[in-house]
Image 1 (cartoon, rainbow, N blue to C red):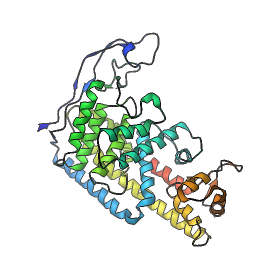
Image 2: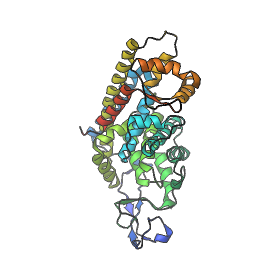
Image 3: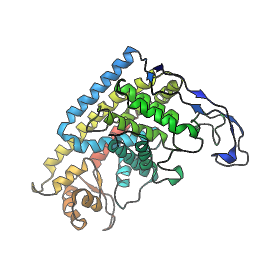
Image 4: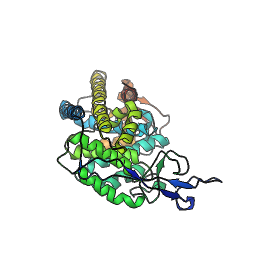
Length: 390
């Protein structure tokens, strides 16, 4: 067993013809410094007792939230997963309203690019949860494939074979951080997986360190941050910390993204305490925010009971339940989710529109879309709270 060590750096000459650059008349030649991540498979996490105590308290909050939701988990699980996806994307400055995201999820509807990207991130989160029984290299590749499926230039589901860097413009010379040479990636990922499979490390610190190591390896040409946060969800489920739902950790990290990125830098300098602290704090913030969202959605749905006049056996009630997790709908979605024939969709949407629960957002018989302004406002409020420093 060894203590966590700072990463090392290599000296490599940048040859523009042999790597990625954005073009231009004067590509910048010179020496750049790709990282050499320290192995962590056998590392001992020597963390202050206060950091460990905060991590344990955050873990208890997760279990308490899971118990609070109980049998109501189905609608809220989908909402929390989508909210986590949107927050993870927002850390990368990819933002979209809840309405735009909802429209992007609809069958047959053309959406805005940012919203499409967030929907792809939701797919990556879903893949992470689905693959959480066995977290291995194939699972990580599958998460990335789901995330980048609409951008083949980014080689979805494949480890990179070229340099990547953060900052520094069109070349890695002078970049803020350069990922390890691609030849090192397979062994580095194997080392990371050996660490997260250990059973002698406290769970939340283990997940935080695993995430920081993944971001240091930077194994893909793009989407490393979002894939790394999807990996967090896979590990939370794999370790049994979450059983039924997604903790919107990214929504907690949004409260102070500068501290999050600074913690990643500290980790690369050999200090794991800041990233563990950030994950503990983010978890507590995210659960508080999630509780508020769930309470709002419960209140909204309960208020609808007094506004809906349909018979008790009408599918109108099923549509109302669907709206708490899919607040933007069309006929194709009702067919997909509830088995309602497209030609009959208006029979169940019109009563909700007349009750003021839905608003039709398009005109004409084709491509009609309905939205629940109350649910969308609750989701946008969740996002606003997540992005607010506390």
